[in-house]
Picture 1 (cartoon, rainbow, N blue to C red):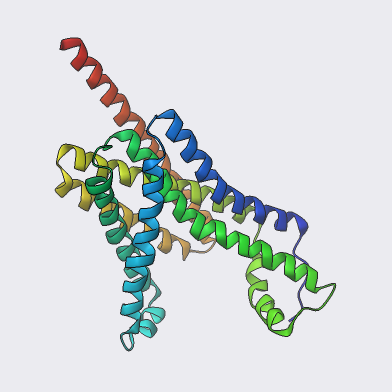
Picture 2: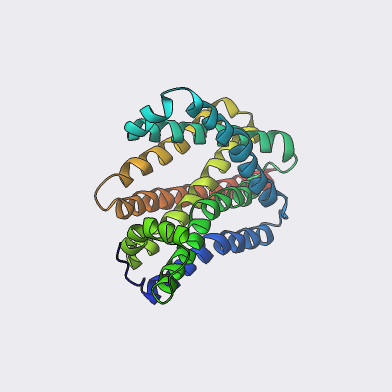
Length: 270
């Protein structure tokens, strides 16, 4: 396969996307922890809960499912059904883990501020794993492709580079910027899920809030995957996720405003 050089601008932007998806949540978490005076605990727990729920529960569970004869080939042939299974397992396992975090680990810190910082830690870890490390890999491959045009590399490595070249060559500046939009929106959605779970634990409405957060999480992941199957899917994914993120931010601000007003009225009448 004939390969052309990946433009320096695109290579640079790959590193920018990687930095935004890894450093962005870290900076946001630090700001939230100081702004809300809740310390690093909710952020750290959010990071650990995401990693444990994925690495110790969801991934082994999916591996067991795929080991059933015929399941992997069937799901691969029915992409929408596979998206459904992946979205469902993500929502159920992560939301149960999120509930356990507030019910067991953060039970003395169940408040709106801890929910926001936890959500940044949990969602930030997800986008760092999904997008940040992916773009580090993309950056490495792109640099290797450009280097290989000047000096041929090892044959096995060249086979790998030829395999990833079409997707890297197709990446545009717009697509990479839209990736940042999707990543930021995903973090906002995770803050929303956590806010719902924390309020459920705090007010004893877990029977309502846990299924609600599961349903919202499932619908977001599943519909995002479906939208991605449309022509120019990443554009529609960015539109879809950013609209939801704006709605979530509006709800969170309104919920906090009402909570502050309720506390003020309680103190004034107390």
